[in-house]
Length: 557
Image (cartoon, rainbow, N blue to C red; front, side, top):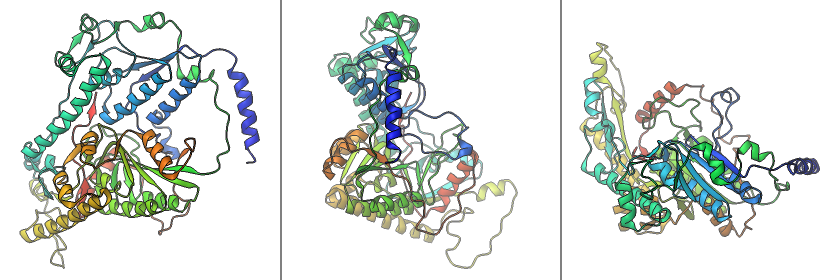
């Protein structure tokens, strides 16, 4: 309240300054990195000098909204570079493009070459332009699994896991020598669903029927000499020729922003919709983000982590905040520790008992990532979101053979019949395997009961779609595991509707309380990517059971 007059005065002076001059006719955005759905959380001071800040989908959407409000700007040019993005993330971007076009702005895609992902995004634009000597790469989907059991055996290593069904195949890369029939079946139905999304996008953009769109995809690749003739792209132009083609000057966002008018500031009072995020591997402990990405992507290793100590505290604070009239929970996680997932679910259940809770799924929300979504009264997912994987598995990495090969002898003295059950020295005995199997089955039955109750489905309908099976968002909608196809805007709209809020009520991210309710836990020491890899291996052996989803193909380049 005290600072508001100064904020308003600063806005007034800034508006006068911005009205002098003119922004570029077209704003250029170079998409060269995978965009996170939400802005990265604030990093520790020492990490702020490592790398550059990433532009998020939400921030890009805010920039598009500002462009839509400025009548002097004619449109946007998307300069697309080949980068790995999940299908759900590409669908987030397509929605932003379509909304910008609906505001009357022209959106043009230009690239040196198009991959499946960039072409899928370009199909949402008014025009698809290609650089001379460029090409449209082979379009379509493929999934490759890497199975390490034979290679690990040569090193004296093995993995011993118990799973609820062959479809709960998160440990298959470690325990199998080749793809099982169930794994192949699951990958097939997922890729078929994603391919259908591509066909629909191509058919709509190029004004083709289903057969024509499939033919366009199957006849790829295309060189720059035939893309216009084959109706794959609209023109072949150099980047230098773009201003003449567009009929206006081009400029960066930074240049445009300095000349664009901004809305007047408002008092940040009154009710709001709280945003809670669960991103990365779900683990016991505190949330953290990897400061440096590992050179290779390995399941569970080197990922961001969502810790129950952090998420539970945020949920409790939001539950107690009377100004938080509704909650949007953003989930982008394959799951992880079953105990951490359950701790989060219990806290979120209290939130849902006090105010509307809507879940928005990101690229993936499976296994434990689906478990934490069950308290919600409404679940939103993208058609390309990977979700489901309702199941549990448990096991360990066995290293005894490796030490033998290295001529290192370990000897253990133990008291307690089963105290060494989770030791990495040897595989489970028959008795130990029976114990682990019983625990896995108990947790699985509880998971099934939770899903059935939250989705208001009879158990006999849940069982066939559970068993660790993974579904796309569109398939999940058909099976009543989600309620709506959409993104964060759709979830926010539903949260406002359920709480009886006006469309202008803002969305604000909830932060954890300054004072923690449980006893404080010493923060983990700073680690490089090697430390996170070792921590991921520890998770496999430490957790009594994992509610983690398969590491299935989910990115397009």
